[in-house]
Image 1: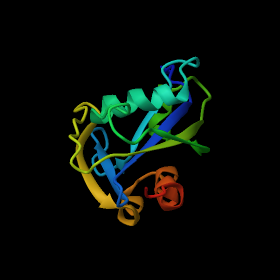
Image 2: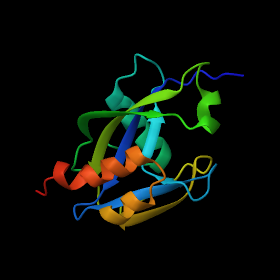
Image 3: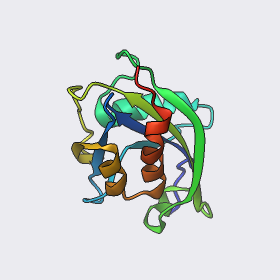
Length: 152
């Protein structure tokens, strides 16, 4: 049976001022590490709201509670949906458009993982985080982080 997931999503790279990146491990595919991701709840949902919602759902981080705002990179990537996840989308959908966001938070920010989605988290230097990601688009966003984040 085909799903109804919208093939437009967000990727939220969570990082510290010294460019350590928070990765989370998927519950449904152990060993698959990633940043926060998630699809729009509806076509009407603004992407910034999708990013806020997914950030809160997956990590417990409130994008509006800290000193640093959620940053819309105004950059997107299109990738082929892995075959084992295509059943979540309407019949014939094989690609997803992913919009990139980031947020800088202190490393001691409490992380509350959604246990049905993720089982572990780790802070890594951005280079190591990019290497650990299973997704090329996530790795690319992390590699672009130093040029996008200006230390205050």
